[in-house]
Structures are given as structure tokens and as C-alpha cells.
Length: 447
Image 1: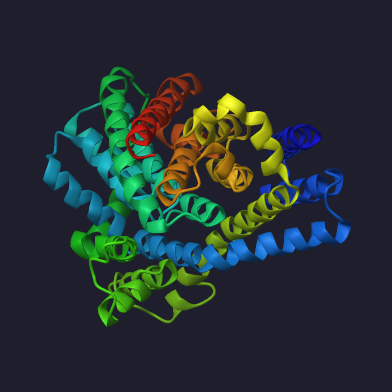
Image 2 (image 1 turned 60 degrees about the vertical axis):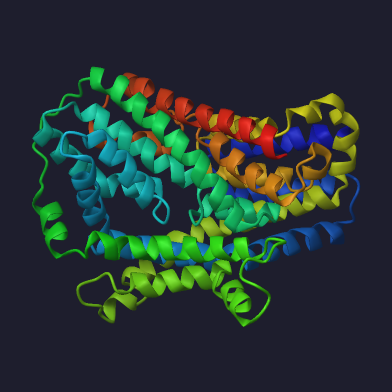
């Protein structure tokens, strides 16, 4: 019983440390890992250090380069103007009057390699200009963009959070992409309907004219929409192809072709292939872009924080695993194991709502569940992939005042706090809740 009590205390410490004490998440997770290991009474002091080191190293070794490569792709997509070209192309497909739908779709695509807060900053001026041109409420376009970004940010690799969770839970990344794409598209539809039904009724005071000159300049000199989407889609296709090739029926055979697909479909290789295509996005690739102070350097700095937090989450999870927590939990779960896929969603949602960061909620939840999948009956390949997506869905619920993304969305769009709760907070509840229900229905069919 002490191990479970200590786990609850550790989670409480992480929440308080990151919200009240303002500690960096990596520090909070590392202290929790050492604290739990020392106080659990099941490990020697040398064993605690060994668990922390191995958990940190193994996790970063699996996902470090993947996150870094994804960050480089996202930075080049942003800086080259490719994100704007994608938005422009999407608007042409859905029609000029369907601005919320266009912003939902482009947010969904852009947030696969780009962090959702950065994506909102990049695309909001375009959403503002298009809303004005179409003479429709800005609130609808703003929340549609926000929820579109959130759908893939939390559920579809190679976004860092889902990649990290897949690494911690040893889930097949191709299966995570397949299930994550299916669930997130349905959640996206719910988010778009919410934006249209609720956002259209909200008026945001817009006193200033948006400066569209910089946006139009990037659109003019940016790469084509097709060229812009290639660095995103190619790695996903390669990773999924590898997962398909690993099926028992071996659709690609067992020869050199299958070996080659298996090689290029490895997440590290696939993302590096995406980086090569991303380097083709600028009108002219310069040495400065590839330097420590250029676009690549900026991408490395952005990725470093996520990699370090993920490593600390892995350390925490390894200590929990080595303490024998799984055996204790298995004895106490009893009928609660029937919660199944709801368990990861509930834990992630509780952590997200309490401390604000989706990434921290994803990594912490994955670390907690890494040794508990067997007791929950979720240890199979498909089940592990669904657990990763369920954690991502939970990490959406809900975005409110303790979430930096909440303030990015409300601040740029000039929403009042009350309007932010009505649109951003309620919208993330609708989108995340929809994803959870879809996952539950899927689990009834495939698990």
C-alpha cells in the first residue's frame, strides 16, 4: 500500500512543483524519481541511481534524434513560409467562405512537426486576415485553428509528446500514427463543429488592423503547398510502411525489399529523410540557416527542452518499474482493470488540468503506466498504441489558465478570459472527450 501512497504523493509533488513552486518540469520529474526510489524501501541507493540513469539514457536513445529531426522539419516549414502556402492551398480546396474549416485542417497538418503554440503564432495573422475578408467572426477561426493544432499535437507522431509516450511504453510508432490519425480526425471534426456552432456566436473586440505585409511576403516567396507537405508526409508514410511490413503476413516479403523498407521506416531514418526534404523548402539554402545560430540551431534549442523532460520522465518510469509497483497495483486493481483504455485518459486528463502542460502530462502518465500495462490488460502491440493515443487525448482536457497555450490563444486573438474559458477550455473538453469515446469504442472492437 505504501508504494501506491508514495506514487500519489509523487504525482502531487510534480503538480505542486511545476505550478506553485514554478520548478522546471525536468527538475520536478528528477526529484520525484529519486524521492520515490529512496523512500519506497524496495531499492538500494545504488539501485536508485542505476534506474534513473538507465531510464533517462534508454528513453533519450530511442526518441532523442526523432524529436530533434521533427523540430528541424517544423522550423524550416515555419521559416520558409511553407506553413502559409499550406494554408493558402487548403483554403482553395474548401472555399473562401469556409475559413474555420480551412484553419482546422491546416492547424491539423502543421502541428504534426510544429509545436501548437508556435503554430498558432505563425498562422493566426492569416486566420485574422481571412476572417476579415470573409466577413465572419474571428472567434470561430481562432478556436478552429487552436483545436486543429491541438488534435495532432497530442495524438499524432512525430509531434514530440506522442513520440515520447511511444518510447516510454515501447509502442510501435507506425501503429500509433495509424490509430492516432483515425482518432484525431474524428476529434478534429468535433472541434470544427464546436468552432462553427459556438465560435460564430462570440464577438471578439478587434481594434487593430492586422499587418498582413509580412504574411503576404512569405506566401509570395514560400515553396508550393505540395513541396511544403512532403517533409511531413514522407516520414509518416515510411514509418507506417515499416509497421505494415512487420505484420505476420509480410506483405513486402522477407527479402531485400522488405529489409530496405524496414530500414527507411525506422523512425530515426524516416525523420532524417524528412529533414532532407525540409532543406529544399527555402528559396535558397544558405550556410547561415544550417549554423548554430541559424534555423537548425533554433530547432536544436527548441527540441532540447522536450528531450530532457522526456528523459526525466523515462527515469521516473524506470524507478517505478524497478520498485515492484506493477505487482502491487495488480493486486489492488481487481475489477477496476475493466476501466481499460479509460485509465490512461483519466490520469493524463487529471495531470493536464492540474498543472497545465500537455507534454508534461503525456510524459508523466506514460512513465506511470509503463509498468502497469500488464495489470491493465493493455500489453499487446495494438493496445500499447491505443494507450499512447488515449494519453494524448487526456492531455487535451482541459486547456485553462495554468496552460501557456491558453494565454497564447486568448492573447493573440484578444479574447477576454471569460471568452477563453467558453471557447478554448470548453473546446478542448469537447475535442478530448470525443477522442476518448472514439478510443473506447475502438477498444471494444480490437482489444
